[in-house]
Image (cartoon, one colour):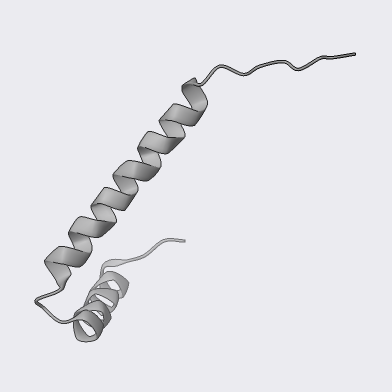
Length: 56
């Protein structure tokens, strides 16, 4: 999915209309924190050792 410059501008205008100018910094901050937590969770999941449960 490639987004060009005009598509990004349209999306930004829609977001500005929906959320208003005052709430945008708060929204961006929460999205950044969510992305950071997601990446940390992915890193924790990949670095955790796997246990083989072969109880045969």
